[in-house]
Amino acid sequence: MIAFASASDDIAAAAATTAKIERLAAYFRTLDPENLRAAARFATGNPLAARDDRRLAIGGRTLVAAARNVWGFDDAALTAAYRETGDLGEALARIWDRPAMPGLFAETLTPASFAALLDELASTDGGHRGARRPDFKGKTAGKRRERFCERVFRACGSPREVAYVAKILTGDLRIGLREGLVLDAIARAFERDPRTVRRAASAAGDVGAVALAARDGVLEQIAIRYFAPIGFMLATPVTFGSSYRELATGEWLAEDKYDGIRAQAHVRHGEVRLFSRTFSDISRSFPEVVRALSGAQRDLIVDGEIVARRDGAVLPFRYLQPRLQRIDPTPELQAEIPVQFVAFDLLAAGEEFLLDEPLLERRAQLALPACAGEAFALAPWHALDPGVSPDVIAGLFEAARARGNEGLMLKRADAPYVPGRRGKWWIKLKRELSTLDVVVVAVEWGHGKRNRVLSDYTFAVRRSAGDPELLALGKAYSGLTDTEIAEMTTWFLAHTTSPAGGHALPVEPKIVIEVAFDIIQKSTLHPSGYALRFPRIVRLRPDKAPHEIDTLADVERIYREMLDREGVTR
Ligand code: AMP
Image (cartoon, rainbow, N blue to C red; front, side, top):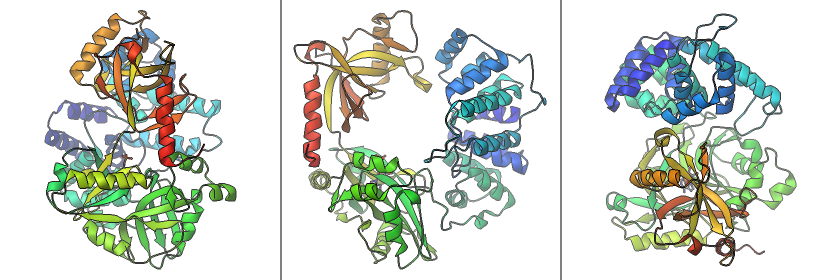
């Protein structure tokens, strides 16, 4: 792994994307097939292939325990190194010491041998995304993972190897590479068309396999096929109420944004498989959808959202949750919470793959009667006039909310289906439920670039206007500017009520902030008895004193209003 580590350090040091691609391509060209396959995967920060259904679940704690067993260090040194670098791999590398007792087999790690070890661990661990296996949790599995990390650390002969091995195990290299750039580097290394490389990647779901095929000149052999999930196209968020400049050019259409779980359905010769966004096969969990689609009159790959729906009305996301927790739903649960697959895109029909067709064409083909039944529906859509006014968007948005949906999706009529991309072709519009004025009661050091600032705020409301007890309600990470965060860090350090330090610092409850959120839920997680979904800091409220913040009664009121809007009777 020495060469991988030094290539990665070189890539991290390059500022321009083109230079990063060039350096990665040069490294790829030096590798034999097995090392190329592994290194390409690792370069995306993935220990396993994207489509691999298994998972490793090696957490920071396991890595630290293993590292301590291998070379020994004291916690203060690790904490200081982590504070400095904001990255566990880098922190471990800083305090690395050559182990007194090297590995039993005096192994050296190459990308290929590391990949083989990871494969072995993933197989014995039995951990599956989306499905829990009995031997995945518990002490034995934890120890097995720790021993595995020890073995890997023992095989490292340098601090840079330790850094990258740890980064790969935790799934983030932090050298400025996204999968798209790795694919560009593959194209560059073996002089292939970048579009062909990308297409192969969405078909293979494994950058490693694509790198090999590019090297051997057989990219065409990796074709999109039924029952191999295709990367999901993603949307870019736009603030509700903006001027929607994106819509000024081209033709657009609007659809409701459903609040369920994304799913891709493959139907071939009456056989149906449903895949989740992580490419897990979730067919067993939604038998009614499988039944509905098995009646399809043609072969299809359909993109859509699975929602809970009763008597024709969409139910809020939390109704779907009990269904998501069950791999095999009982007939009672199916009757209690019926689900529906709402289809909004068509990726294949018969032998034809439609990803390069414009959205309107794919939509037209989707509208042909394919299958019937309560558990399948087509998402209705509206064509928007060019330069549509924000008022029209607001009207469509309110109508979507009135139907129980989360917001609006705006899609360009001529957009191809771009797997795995968050681009400007699809825009999502959501609006926060409400905002609350709260006080900050504790702060934490951030991660990554924010490791030297206190950027994570735990906030609280008052029990009541007459009772100053503060009840924590959640934690928010983002929203303020870098300057504000820096200034607040200085203030918090001077006003912590626990000067001894540590990761989380309780602070004097003086700073009032406004937080926005999408959903409010009952929860035992926080003393207030409620939790906010997706809280974000809107602004600091220096104009408000801590005794003026919102109270538990305000939280309860917003919660009740939310239920009323959803038409839930209590
Ligand atoms: P978010 O999860 O907020 O990032 O929004 C993106 C998600 O919205 C997608 O991954 C889909 O699961 C979901 N979604 C809901 N309705 C639609 C729709 N009409 N078109 C595309 N995605 C949708």
